[in-house]
Each structure stands twice: as structure tokens, then as C-alpha cells.
Image (cartoon, rainbow, N blue to C red):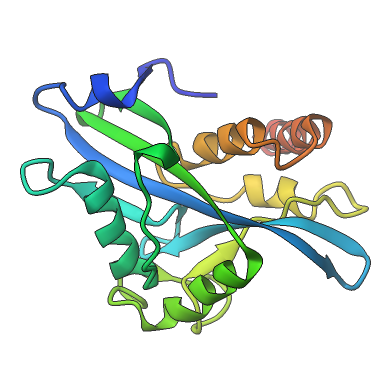
Amino acid sequence: MLQPDTRRHVRIQSITLQGFKHACHAMLYARSEEKLFRRIPVRYAVLMQMRFDGRIGFPGGFVDLQDCSLEDGLNRELYEEVGCTLRLSDADHMCSHVTDTPQKLVTHFYTKELSLAELHQVEAGAVSAKEHGLEVMHKYAIAMGLIRVPLFTLRDGVGGLPAFFATNFIGNARDELVDALRHLRLINEERLASALKSVTNRNEFYF
């Protein structure tokens, strides 16, 4: 759930706010017929990234509206972080979140569906991106900064999406992921709710 001090604003309203910084991030995804271990359907490949601070987020970054539009700034950030030459537009905008603390910030979230071949190209090109290994890292391998969100749950009820939700996300990236999965219907609501409940139960057990 979103924090109490976070308010949802439509894109046009949010860019008129005075004294706020703006950041744009994007979720790239594609339908997939791939199967993990040849038996677990992937269904969708959803990209996120391991950041320099060890937290998980979406590609993107701060945008100076005095220099460019939101989308131009986002496309520049995508090129620098993942080498992505895809052009996102205002039609790909999903939501804007406004927060007053700890800083006045508006985060603009975009989603774009690719073909699986296009997504593979993005993954392959990420190693040549300007910020690879600096702002963007990979938790498990030096070769890539991008990671895929597991939209499945393993038989133990923990592996897969529940374990992924329990990792450390930057800002409201986890909320944006959950909202996008629901809005785009990339996962069954029952499975999503079960994965989120599993994280809550684990937190109650440990704390």
C-alpha cells in the first residue's frame, strides 16, 4: 500500500506543482511462452534492475523539466542505464505519485509492452549501457544490470514472487510493481494477493 503522505495525481496536474523534483521510471515487459525448468510457465517477462545501492527499482531517474519533457528525460535515462533506444511517450504513462517527505518529489511511472524478441534485445544491450556497473548492477552476475520479476510461486510457497516481494526496493517501486501487475492483469489476483500475504506473514514471524 502507498504511504499516507503519498497522493496520486494525474500527470498534467503533477507537473504544475512548484518546488518539486520529478523522476520518471518505466516497467518494460513482454508476453513469454518460456518455462522455468521446462515446467513452470513464466507467462510474462517483467524487467527491473539492481541499483548501485543494493536495492531494486525500475530503470529511469530524475528529469529537469526546464531542459526537456518528462518522456524525453525518461528516454535519455533508459538509454544511459540499459542502452534502450525504445521511445516511450505520454501514452505509456500509468500514474504519478506525489510525496512531501523526506523531499518534495513527483515520481512518474510508465509501462510499455514489448515483444519477447525486443525484450531480449534490451537485456543483451544493457551490458553496453553507459551506467552499467556504476548506477546499475546485478545481484547475481556481473554481466547484467537488469533482472526479471518471477511471476510464479514455487511449491514451498516462498520461492518466486513472495521471496521477490520480500527484497529491498527503492522508494515506492514495490507499490508501482504491484499496481502495474494488477492494472495490466499480468498475474491472477489470487496469486498476487497470496504472494503479498506471504511477505506479511514472514515479517510478522521475524519481527
